[in-house]
Length: 195
Image (cartoon, rainbow, N blue to C red):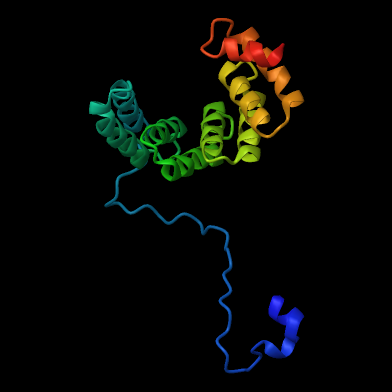
């Protein structure tokens, strides 16, 4: 644009032999292929067994985290629509500070079932961590639409509003946090901002 503004369109290369721009088109997904008898079948019951085993390993202990992640992945191989496994696997990535992987998994979970408030809340945490406050605000707002009694979402939405310079919008969420979590970890901070 700057070249055109300064010297006119004559500076652009309109030759017929010039290399054309690549045009990418997005096509709707094709119909799913016929199942190959050599590949494992969708097995929801076995997937749930792997999910339960992964959940038992996923107790915050770093020594079992990789084993839990492997079990969640196995559950997802058997049932790619097991949203809880996607969210828990994303949580493992998030705890390891692997934000890109975690974000992709949360977004995939939301794409499959947008009614899991945890996926919206956790995706909001990633946006918040990366300083993308408007995106974080939207995610926390959606989490609260799905679960208005989730105290932590009120807290983080209030913090996000404060960081955006929107103290008036933050105030009701400080108050909600205080009411929902009167002995919560951040209740003293919430008192400072809501009074």
